[in-house]
Image (tube, rainbow, N blue to C red; front, side):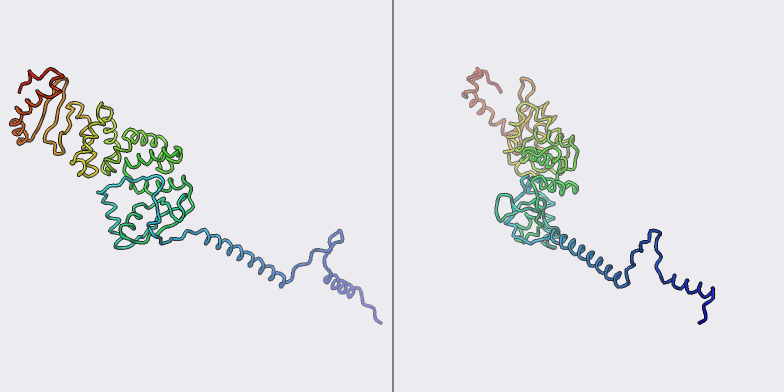
Length: 337
């Protein structure tokens, strides 16, 4: 047998070496590489795991997503704090009512399950839409959320604040009501979207006016902070509350709209009244009393009333002479006209 020469042996050894895996110096073998089938299976499992995570996230999102319901408006109650002041001359409410009557309720209200009344709901935002639904006999579109008292009032205030829906005095009264319910200044600031100094100013005005006077005058949408401050200043006068109470019982005040009511109140206790101290004797203001020092004058710009008074004055003086007031002051003999 012919033995292979040296060149043949080198070629054979090279082929053998090429078929063997390279071994590190420590003699260990490198890890085996996965085949194509194993790679495909691994990628498929990764894809299935990612799709399962996406499906789980989608289910959680669907579970937490808010849905709009159509409910009986009679099942709803107002918020724990009322921000709006009812007014018969609210043109914005009438416009909203006409729009919903024509096009339906486009924006749902936001409410929560009533904390104390089973089967009922409490409104956080959308009181006017609720009123419209009640008046028109419509189902109320609503989103029901889980809200704490604090979350409810903050949502309520922030719904109206950016749209400038609340008048100055409504904002002041809203702040006063929240404070009376124990909410802190941080909550008031968040609800009204103002800083704490502004909250203090709103509270000062509302507390000086008082709930009864605010409700008697109404929202007064045309009246801003400076004129309300004038009214607060006027309330510092002695007897100002009595004069306003008398004004509030007059038919002129009762038939006036909310801005006119404010004007009448300011006229009664405002800067001009400090000089003349006049007050109306009747709703039509045919005459009033002016006091200056110890002098008292009966003033009228009504010619018919002046004629009537001249005709009746002798009789009135005779009645006065026999009155307890005249006897107690010793003027029964000295009355003149």
